[in-house]
Amino acid sequence: MSRDIQLKERWEKLVAILSDKFSQGEDLDLDAIIYLIGVQELGKVHQKYQKDEKLNLMHIAICRLLEPYGFYEFDYVDKEGWPHYTVKEQLPALRAGEQSVLMKEAIVQYFIEKELIE
Image (cartoon, rainbow, N blue to C red; front, side):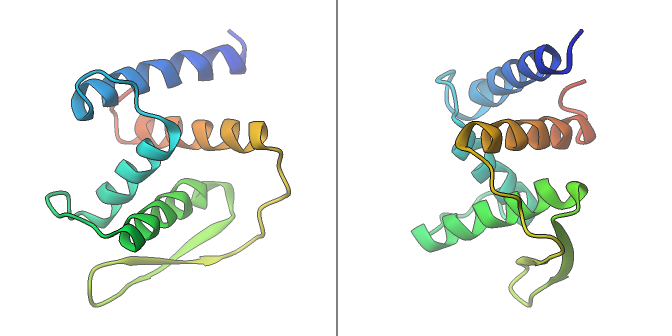
């Protein structure tokens, strides 16, 4: 099975699982899934967040997702419990489609590690 087909199948399975659990079956988009990962990484799941905090949650998720690719490195957790990362390598200039594939690949890998999908 080609890598692209496998990624597509895993992505669709993951979207179905998360959408069923968090949006009553309406498909979650990439940003919503990134947000959920940010909330999970922060560990404060039963809290309401302001708009700027939601952006920070998405930033946490992106850093965590791209850490295995060598772009970010975990640095520390601040006194409020928010993780911080340092940039190890600048992201290359990617077209929108390439960004989407990279993020989907990273998200699928994240949930394989969390044993939500195979």
